[in-house]
Image (cartoon, rainbow, N blue to C red; front, side):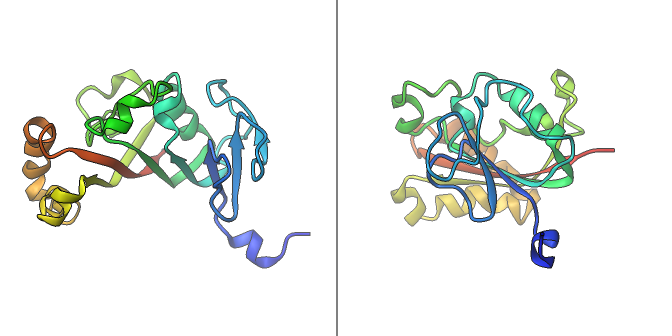
Length: 190
């Protein structure tokens, strides 16, 4: 029988959890490793969950390996509750890790999840909607120490300074390389 803590605790899903599943999460992966609760190939849609099941989904260094970002995000949208929290961590496309791993199929930047925003001008490729709550780029250590990382991420607190991220992402990121991106999204449902 579930105790009171279990009834009020957010229901968390970790896609591609491997051996490093988040505490209290349901872990799903295609290989039966220790900590994996459900063995399922994440390229096979639908996932074995009911609609509106999860309060949070974590996708940590997994999305870049999957066949279709749109299909996976649509499935995440289906299985999450309204206003659910989605955490995605992935390499920035300018990091060597993004390209040296032969299993990476996608190379993402700060704007890759804009296509799921309700008001985005080309969001017609999918009906799945997410609001971007924050996006954080980690830069190579030299640029972090020089304060460039701080400036690029200022738009999370001061949206009027989003031009700094845009300038970096469109012109400077090939010199001042990114390492990894962390997105926090929120499921938008009627």
